[in-house]
Image (tube, rainbow, N blue to C red):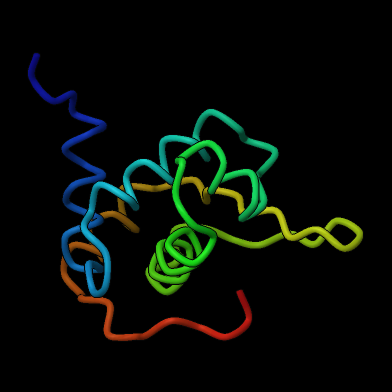
Length: 106
């Protein structure tokens, strides 16, 4: 089964921002956030991905550094939400590489 155009677009976005984790972790996080438009916590994501909270935190930090997700505080919870991608944003992300590290605020 071939890749859809949406999958190819996400691959183009993820390649420049791949610093610490393989793209498959970030892609899986993105897929879950697409399915859950209200957002998910780190604990929710780690359960669904069957991995550690630390691994999820790194993936989220890289995606946040690439400006692909936003964090919404709801009470004491932090919900991670996928930002809508626009064509211009896709082009810009494909031209620049993510040079940041893991952020402490996640």
